[in-house]
Length: 214
Image (cartoon, rainbow, N blue to C red; front, side, top):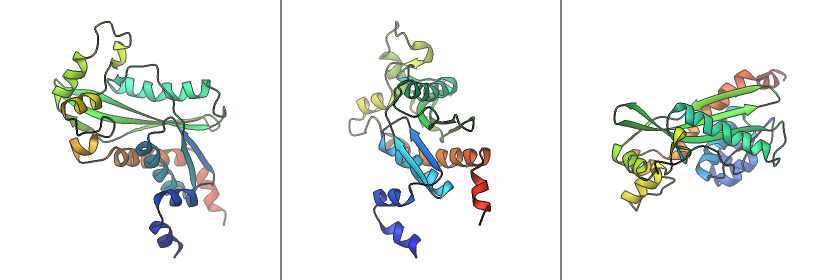
């Protein structure tokens, strides 16, 4: 069948075959694990979807702390990309921001936030990845590396936990540390959160009407 043929192709080719359709999403990063996780999720939920990455930055701390900062960071990247004029004003944008959260004293977790904004349909939805327990020493290091006069201190720390993990464990990648620390890749975390995001998006919009007309 066509399905089995497609799965044996390399992932890049698979992405090309499933591109197109009603859903066109730009994600505010070129981080391949994030982009490919979101792309796979949207193509599974919608059948066809075009998902591409364009790098954007946020105006908050390098390492956001707390749910509000995570949400703010994701939303801020969307706003900055819109304001840059490099995407269409009605373009649906998805954004990812990784943040840390202290659930109890000295019990820190890393969580990723995904936010989708579709200005045409007036949809704004967010989902979160699973939470990964962090050794508090990694957070303490990031706190120590953050100057007391860091002007973004209100939103978090000046150094990411990935950087402090890499400093302590040089064989661990500062961006893709999740696999070594918790046995799950960033791509898998993002993919699962993006399945929920894409499903919420589909259910909140009129996309599902297209499938009723045979």
